[in-house]
Length: 243
Length: 108
Image (cartoon, rainbow over all chains, first blue to last red; front, side, top):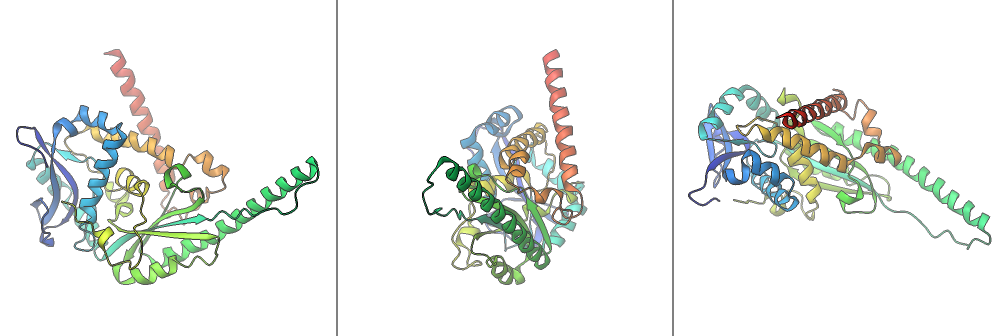
């Protein structure tokens, strides 16, 4: 990961129970908890370099993807408390001290997350713009047509929102945790269709098939559902456990 | 070390890999448990970064304009614990802090 001669620090990805028995991962264990760690170079993750790197989109995307890769490898194999990006300790003792100081809260979170995964559900309103038919004869007709199209689109969106809300409530009732996050704009989602729901659910692995089937059935062909995951429970360790 | 559970998992059979970079950024930068490490500055930096990311993810005005701000005011959807106000409060504190740091570094 890093070559010799550099000033290495300890990056913490997340925490699992010490008896999780994960192969191929570096861990630091203390008080029945194991921090999944990686050695990083302070030339990259020290205070000044990190500040610069955070502004470097290519660096950030790569680093964030690595963080998620490591944690995603654990999903399903052991209960896991995912850490937010950028938790760095100068030495192993710092990692141990963190595990000791936060053990009650980390154990509580692990117990709560055991046997669960996070699933993401995004719902898009598929573009329903239709050909308006007859060509407008006059400028006034054209404006009227535009107005009608706008009103129709507004109605469609209002109706769709009601359905999406009902879907979210239904999915929340099947899950042990639910969180509706701000929908992503097209620049982020990479789709022209309006995102109406960007939610995460904490789902028991036993109920996962049932949950996915329910999510896949939004009850309206104008709604397109995208299910993502299973994810580490990123959305369900904050903010309650942080306090 | 890169076991790629999601991409190789049979848990969601037949499901294409549909999580985008945006989904990953959103989670890794803005969610996950916050624990202060030894590199203290990172917490504030990450928080400021997520402020930027959040602005990108959902400019509230834009969302409202599109009529998709229902998640903002619905206590059920918020999980009933008033996260929204807390988040705003946190943002305000961070902005203040950033402003203060700015000023103090100007003076020095």
